[in-house]
Amino acid sequence: MRKLYRSTSDRKLTGLAAGIGQWFGIDATIVRLVLLVSGVFSLGTTLLLYIVASIVVPKAPFEVMMPDQPFRYYG
Image (cartoon, rainbow, N blue to C red):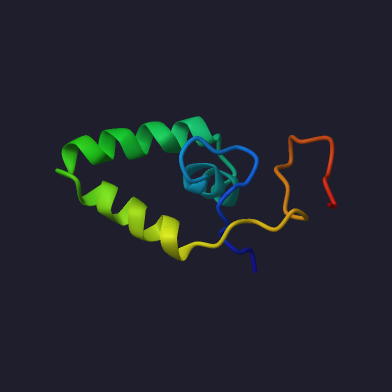
């Protein structure tokens, strides 16, 4: 079972969009664009859900890395 984590390496605000992209196996840019469009048309409901999810979803441990990253950090 895969867990949803906020990304610690590919983050713009909180890393949630990158974590969602990694979880679904799609690029984080697509998730960010969908969140942006959804935020405009939902009159702020998406923004509220994004804030709540950013608080609830934990940050990724260093062992959970994006598949396109060649190096791992074990510090």
